[in-house]
Image (cartoon, rainbow, N blue to C red; front, side):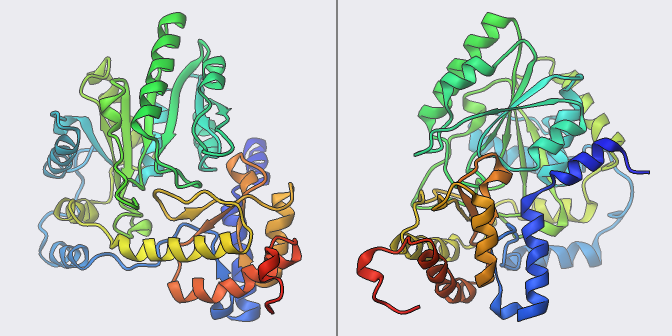
Length: 403
């Protein structure tokens, strides 16, 4: 009864979920307080107070809030989202260019459904969010991976140029990046734009730049993130409030379309139609209203920075090799052996749940989601220390210390 295609996908399904499920087994065996689950980017925070107050207000006093609406979402909500983006972009983005969606995952599927013909190619940079493969496959597209620099995780633009073909339809950008935490600088985006423009002219094609942005409010060390619309006219932004407002379970986000995108009116009609026929119909009505009240609200980044700095500094001291993330809430350290899957499995010996980099198209690394409780992070250092000793990673000056 299950299609062969889906069976194949199940066999290659997300390592993130696989490790999360392994964690449930360990919790049953050792107790929740003794398992260090770094597998899932599931914010430990409760949503900000203002978000919860807005939810109470609309849940108890909202009129006609549970009825059908325009498939693109409430007009007043889209207008407020558009105004927010216009301020950030410093140019006008009309409310008709906004479609409210069931999170970023819903938004990505809506865009891909709208643009892809069979075997059209979508380019991503590895390491990448693992579900991109399945989203592209959902709409009969062809997934094309382009490498990044092993030291900086910046896109290899020479390889990109070689892999853009007449079938290339879109490029997905994810900055701040999941799983590395790097932020694409203005220079990177300018150079990326040059490569795309050159290949579009050479091949007579148009490439849509899809910017997947759930982490743009999670930035450290006064890093500024360039606005995608400033570099690519043929672009869309897909965002959610899962991370910035700790609303992962509410599935609320949006698609924003550049006002200069070619065939804009037809494209917007396609998005709205795809939103309906994919079964989303419209974004959750109650949380559309909550979001409109909360656009200037975000979680306290000081707490995430405390987690990042503590865990990063301890892992570096133990001999791990890792780039310090500029955004998001992930560390992506190199594994001491080539087989990252074996390394992640070995880590479960110490109740550490780490996700193999293989699942992100980047073997030889593991992803660590440090959005868990800080007391858990502190307690887990003992387990990381044992893990590092097992692989002879610990520097000689620390070897005399006991476990």
